[in-house]
Image (cartoon, rainbow, N blue to C red; front, side, top):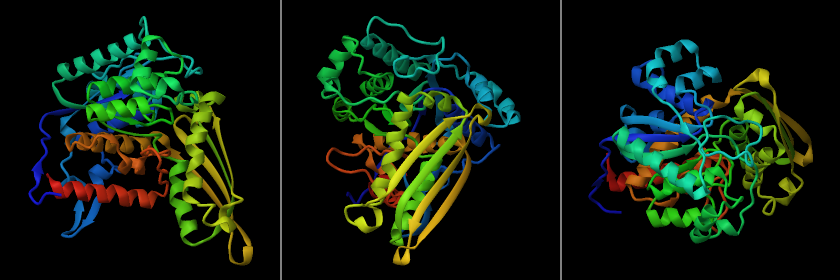
Length: 424
């Protein structure tokens, strides 16, 4: 690291683009606008409220590294429905309508661009605001035009893209994903193994826009897009925002492991009724989520190192669509553990949460940290952002870290390293 710090320009507007303008993204947008107006606080966001212990004492993260300011943020996005952000947020019923009404003018001005969508990957919902094109490459070029036009229209200095749309059907990597040449050929030939989220990521990276994947889709975690990100010097990260039940797992499981307590069963079930719940009611889409959520415990409990404690761990996950709950998710966990001399015990967790309230600060932090990484020339996979994901994207040949506290240590150490080089 250099002794003399380098100034990292943060002048000008930061455009945050969200594929998907549903409950998560509109809660995020409204929260930023409400915070700017002094009508709320960005609780849960480390970039706004977090601190780190330094050699000079405890410091706010926003005072340690050069982050974009809330007043410089501009929002845009795509959605299969044509509702503006005010209408979409009102329909989602996450935030108090009185607050939304105070923000009506600003939110109403955020109108979705037509979306790239395929019923092959999301079957349980559909909408009218969808792009058409002769090939998938044509759709990608339309997204690139959208990005350029948004940047020009809103006079943005920089852009980031945060995937906030639905979970896509489970997809295994195939030959079309193995190289950039094969991927672009597949776009031109309408290869069915290219999902909409991959088209968004491709368009973003080609435009030099940092991309963060908030869903469990196979998206930027393919060799083709990783090669493009490295070529263009673009930061990427993913996948699947760590919000409700999985957040609790990554808090509780490290504690059990730290005390060398055994675990032989962990049963998890959820009910939720928002658009995400409707999409996940399809088995193909649920499988994407199941894989994302299912690897968490195995990544924390090391059965090979401690087989007497974790080799018989049975992990079951269920998600049930229940429309009356809307965005109010409820999760139940039954954990069968054992301790001294093998005596059995149980832990029960009943977590009643608001999924979008937990996801909004994650979207905030990923947007600002991705922008920071871009300005600090940190291209490719950003493992230090694993803290925010259920299934963190890692460099080939390495295993993801799922322990929340070890993830936080990596996040903080990376920010401290940035602070040694780049001035606020």
